[in-house]
Image 1 (cartoon, rainbow, N blue to C red):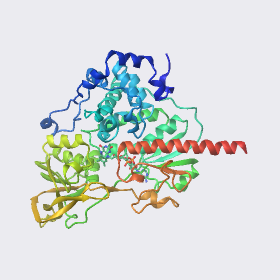
Image 2: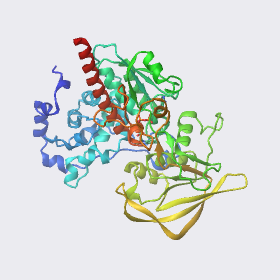
Image 3: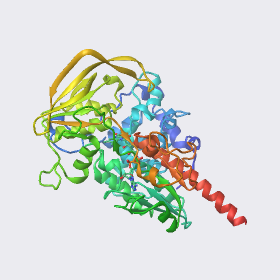
Length: 498
Ligand SMILES: Cc1cc2nc3c(=O)[nH]c(=O)nc-3n(C[C@H](O)[C@H](O)[C@H](O)COP(=O)(O)OP(=O)(O)OC[C@H]3O[C@@H](n4cnc5c(N)ncnc54)[C@H](O)[C@@H]3O)c2cc1C
């Protein structure tokens, strides 16, 4: 059978079966179809356990949804995907019922399709550019379909491993095993490099493991995608802090000829308001890492986390939603999001906000904490909230929150989780002498190649962008792999000529 993997997107569109699909259902009929709804667990039931909330589409639902794709000549969806997934092709395979081929098409460009199908902000990327949106209709559910194809392959047990080129003997090191590092590692392994990923923590996966909770992204699903990389000969070394356990110079001595830094942004920001040092006030990073990786919700564990009954989470991003929904699952009777702008400006995925509301989370929008008040034992008991209104747009393009004079209220709390952004992990910028670093602590790179001021060091993901998204981190990993490969070919070619 013909191997379609080497065809370009436009060549693929010429495949005869796609014309057949088009003839069978006319564009008008496809356009008139309603978007599928994701089956999910009942909110009351799920808010007391860690089971995955979204249940995934059935094959019938997926094939029906795939029929909504118009297979556009110039697919806008693809230009909205930072890793360049061939979206129309994988969707057309689903429409035909060829689910394993759909999964293979995804893996051509994405090392983590089950992850992306669950956590990508599709509404701001591929789905935002779907042709249906122009006609004021709901976009094709690209994320749901991506998840379906990847899950189908995993559950079928017929997991394909992407082909890798003949080993070229060149050793490459990756610092950090989050989505940027994993995506880079996958692409470099496909090109025949000898890739080793060094990870500071005991678990591989970065935020996918220590940040995003099980009810949104089960760890065993991440592990299956990591196993595929292992089968592609990628090596993983955990509990190894580059810059401490092993230095930049050690990596050179061990023969690594290129380094990709993907060390993320795990340093929590605080607001520097009175009371932030009280017992019961902590960052989302601490809270989620302890619960997700250290079993801290278990009172028998070595370092149990405080279990609040009146929990306020400060912030409006995905991390805030994950924290507040975790608090609810751990038994909070009142769980609140406190956000200084309105819901329209919230950076969290729309689905996370919807799920949080369904699970009983209260949204105190246009409120900003100005002080936490403790008891005589130094434990947080109340918070003072300033009511806000919205002014003119600021540099981020969002309307600036402005305090309403005299409008302050006090609310009882016994736990506060601060989720107001993160800063880059500082160790690599501090220990790789010669790196250029911005005033925010991010590594400065050439955006077209992700190459840093140190010629053998490339960087991507949150260590370059500050807190961003999984798919942007993965896109950086792909870009860096392509550029490092071009550079290696060039330098090897030159040394062969000498
Ligand atoms: C709770 C939470 C929820 C989120 N939800 C979403 C979401 O729904 N959708 C979305 O798109 N994005 C989401 N994000 C953001 C997204 O997860 C990040 O943008 C993404 O993980 C960044 O990837 P990365 O590979 O750059 O870094 P990370 O995932 O942070 O991985 C970096 C890794 O490097 C390791 N490391 C650091 N320093 C060293 C060192 N010196 N030596 C060795 N290893 C080191 C760290 O331990 C870590 O494992 C969320 C973030 C959080 C915190």
